[in-house]
Image 1: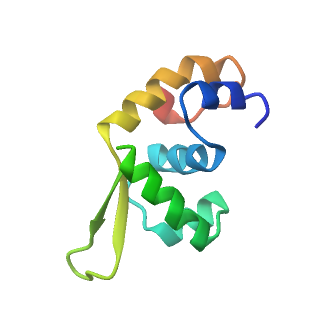
Image 2: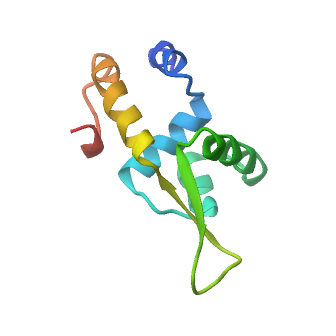
Length: 102
């Protein structure tokens, strides 16, 4: 992560936010528990991070029609734009980029 921190800081993204964004840009429409598993972030921690990300306009949370207790987290157009703007900078640091960078 040390080689990515300058890029993340430049775009105002924390490491935990980046882990979530990276997963959602690859696999949009996940539940918070799925994000916890994929990002290795505890449930109490992810709740606060998702709240701040929603306030920043990077994600949106929607209740599922069939079960109003559950929510799906998706990225916004702003997040897709952010990912594409960060791609060239992060590409300089690694050669194993995911499909969403294209």
